[in-house]
Length: 340
Image (cartoon, rainbow, N blue to C red; front, side):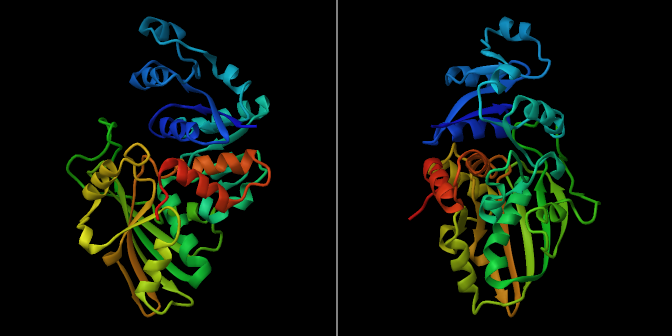
């Protein structure tokens, strides 16, 4: 029987998760929610996705806009096995008790504190720890990127020290009211929250993170320098390990991908997963092994990288006997992420 899924919040992440769920052979999207009518609410109706009223949003505004509602969030909760909470930061924690009272499993996003759920989640790193639980938190876009990279290096070579600087986008493309216009803003919290958050996945990871915010909307970029405990023989071995791992996209020098503009242009040309880039992006020329010291850049598309993780989290919570490799393979194939 297909897992019945609801998505609470149909914004940047929610609409992408909803689209991804509709592509899964073992899931059914029951409906999504909005608090007020918008172009995204109209998009849901046009795609014949049942739309439910969330929070204390005024039903009259939907009626005036001619946007039909299938019911309220409580109605949706009564019809699903799992709810994916894609509401704004901190709203998920307010919703947690409501989900428990409704008897549904719940998936939260990285904007919430770790204690909102039983475990933090990244499919490549700790899928098995989520199997059978009633709630998990998919870590943030940047932490997802770090956790995926850690899944490549930790088991193979061990990490004695990891220093990462995150060059963060100021806003998503649609967020016209956010972000620096002419400036670079250091995040003066040291370490930045990303390192401690990564340790909710890898408790012993010796990582220290710093972050700056720059005036772009395209992607984040991480600069990483690691001291490995058991270094591989060559840079080529490191590149091969990343290339062989699902959810990594490596660009060769001849492809002339200079930075994030070309990455997103590639995504648009490739037509994968709504023209998003759901994989960690590395440049072969930006990977270097010098003795035990490994350096690499990676780019993270903040709007979409957590989408496949949410799909895998649904299986971990709701499909008995789920296995990481099988779930990741199915998710990636349905989203067009698989490569020869």
